[in-house]
Amino acid sequence: MMISKDAYLLEGQYLEHQDHGRDIKYLLQNECDDGTIFYMVVASVQPRPVIVTDCRFRDEVWEDLGPMKRRR
Image (cartoon, rainbow, N blue to C red; front, side, top):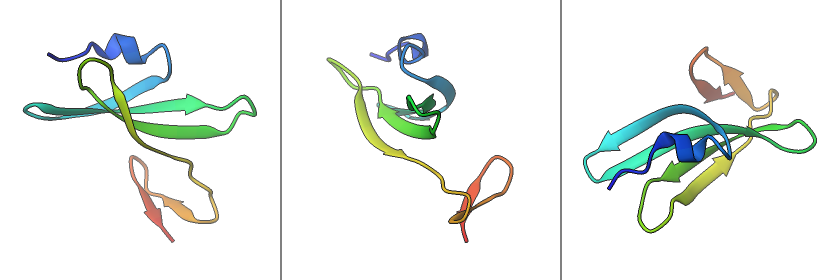
């Protein structure tokens, strides 16, 4: 059963999803209390979603390629 992306919007901004049949993951953007942006990969599994990973991008470490980032 696929969990609605609307459920994730409560905790972050939906950016995109990857659908590999039963393996569905969502990429979300969120903001810490101090304003730092971070990203989460959330697996859509039952009975509740699982955060697979989260990360922050430091400008001195990552090069912005538009829709992608690359380590410098």
